[in-house]
Image 1 (cartoon, rainbow, N blue to C red):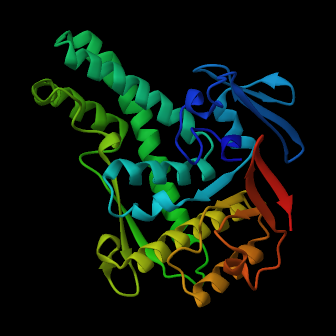
Image 2: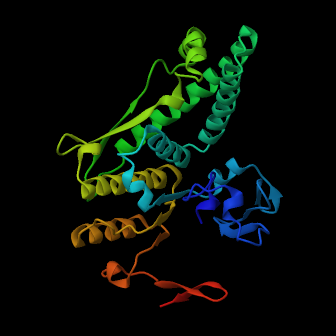
Image 3: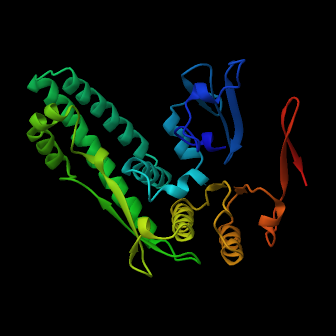
Length: 309
């Protein structure tokens, strides 16, 4: 279901890795979303998308389906490197600003090309100037979208989970002219380092447990999970407010590190959103107090079987 949105889905896997092994015959997901027939799949390395029977770019999925998720791997968000937090922030921005995908892709393409020039020790100012102009234009949009996303999270109505104060930690300017100047002036340093050392690809997301004034990375495991749930719920509320419909929520092993009171608070918040939510757990006892359809997934000789309970 996460593949109904742009990107590599909640596992961050490549199209080849998703194909059943050893057959490697490809895969396809078909769904009806908001009155649209959506299909996406791959045979090999390239993923295709169709919307209402017509080929479409992957970024178009962001205008049809808005899917948010929370997985156990994300529990370490505040302890991992900045790249994971940027990825999280970009998912938030994409859910609120569908055009964010185009800005991110344009910036990444120009960044890869500039880094190739650096690795090959090419010093042609014309090539650098052209790529830096592209990076500056796309990077300014990227930075502005991230800032808007953080503002919308902050403006979302508070819930039962602790509020996180967010801030984007950036190195250098974020306007187009400033970015272009910074990239041009940093060519010598970048050539020495072997990569581009300034720009939105170096941003980080900082969070503080607002009620305690403590950085998220210093909080307990349970507090970090509660802060993360708080942000996902704030994101869902912001999406519902912006587009008039709640997103689809995929909450994998969501009850881990939550006591009974917080589990019930989460279920109440999801119910109040009116979102289609899919939650997984290791046993039915984790969902006591939640009025929901219950499915059991088990293995069989032919593969996985899903049964309604």
